[in-house]
Image (cartoon, rainbow, N blue to C red):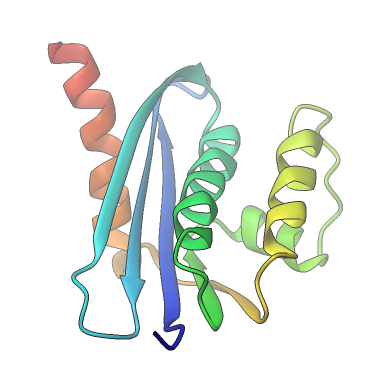
Length: 138
């Protein structure tokens, strides 16, 4: 099977910052496969930690499919600019998450990381908030 291109859309949500947090990701394939949706409650943390944890979850899933290329879309300007090397990672608690994301990205043959407006990331946002809501009900 020829490797397909994979697109991931990621978002993290935290109610209170820090507060109850969830992560969401949509993994889209460049072939006929249906997208895969992922979400998880990650406990009490900040929005920026949730953004990175969403990215790590999506990268883990994308790697399983050995794509020819990977495109990452996020509405977090901080995450995108840090991952592109445009911003330094100043917060000590984000450094290990950033390092792990960089390590995982090196396994892909080609990577693009793009900032999108929140409106273009609605499904990942919905999934992140769904994880928080389901945890609260559960």
